[in-house]
Amino acid sequence: MSISHLARSIGESATLKLNERAKLLADQGQPVIHLGGGEPKNKVPITAILSSTAKLTAGDVKYVPTDGTPSLKKAIIRYTEENYGWLVAPENVIVSSGAKQALYNVLVSIIDPQDEVIVLAPYWVSYPEMVKMVYGRPVIVKPEDGTFQPRIEEIEQAISSYTKAIVVNSPNNPSGFVYNADFIAEVVELCEQRGIYLIMDDIYHKLVFDGMRPPSPYQYTDKNIETSKIIVINGVSKLYGMTGFRIGWTIANRPLVEVMKNVQAQTTSCPANVSMAAAEGALNGVQSTVESLRLSIQNNRDVMMNELRAFSALRIIKPRGTFYCLPDFRAIGNSSEELAELLLSRALVVTVPGKEFGAEGHLRLSYCGSVKDITEGMKRIRWALDPEAPNEIYIGDRRMVRDWL
Ligand code: PLP
Picture 1 (cartoon, protein in one colour):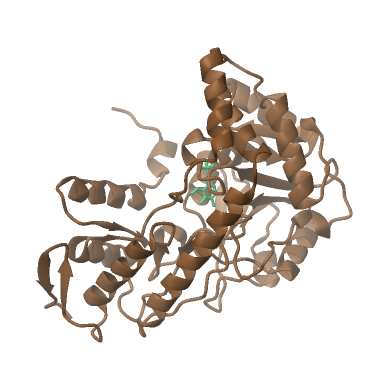
Picture 2 (picture 1 turned 60 degrees about the vertical axis):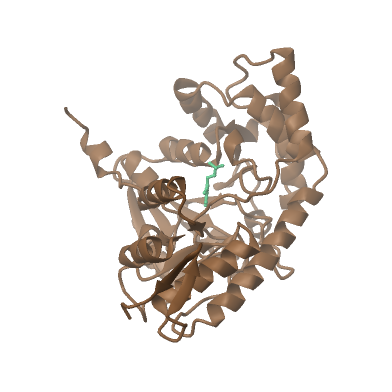
């Protein structure tokens, strides 16, 4: 069997591997707690269900325009105006099968072999792999001071004549960090000075806490959508709990959208009409569902923070958005894969190794599940790793004694 060099260079997902093992254990009736999840449990908005079932019952399930249906684009244009203050044209919008495909299509469309893309650590696992998949080179910028906020000088130093783009994800997966407005303004300025694309992955942009509002990059440019190299990626997966519908979109200048349309036409033809109708239903429906999701996740974040503070060996930067946090476990162990493995095998808790996100020694913990899962999961994590925690615990109906610390 002959496999391409490119495909071989793409990393295996440790997350999927752990998830598979967790599923096996759960199928065997083991009381597994999932703190590794990447999707909220909330119900899909009823308006999304109604508009997609209407398409199904009418049999309106054929190919549709490659870049998205005009009615969904209209809803996206309104969303962009309301949330970003920019009025864009239908030609500035392309709908894809998830924000993931949107991002990939952007990269295929702008990257030549050897071009470099700056990725800020900690980063979503797919960015470096996707850059490699289009024969580009990911250049990782990791804040030297151990925080999640890089300095603009650190980014500047990473720029070379091959740099084509910077990816910024705020609020950030995996840390829950929200970059401040000054930083976003500086990145916009830097990109404009150097003629670099700024790719904003805004998939979590409304899941922010403590009264924060993530800054819109558009407010820091004098350019307009046609002259700007700002690209905004968004979707319905996280805010509306619609991960399975696979709808995301890109807002960019017309020439780029035109090229992305060709790329999409030759690969997936178009996003599914039923899913686009669902996204349209969500965007045009009452938006209180997003606010109630945000409030319940903020409450979960507070519960998680209380639990983490009780574990004195950990260092934690309070997350201000998403449904993830990234505590530093280095006082306990440097290998995040070993820590995650120990937590799964001994305590039946799923976590994600920080190594996957460019943050070795950290574990990503999700708080998108129930409060009960967060408290029970954290109780087990402390039992497994914290010498100050009692060394006996019940996991399900089994009494367990810790004998490895
Ligand atoms: N961007 C980030 C930062 C994510 O965390 C995810 C999903 O986990 C995506 C994009 C992908 O979103 P979608 O499900 O719409 O493809």
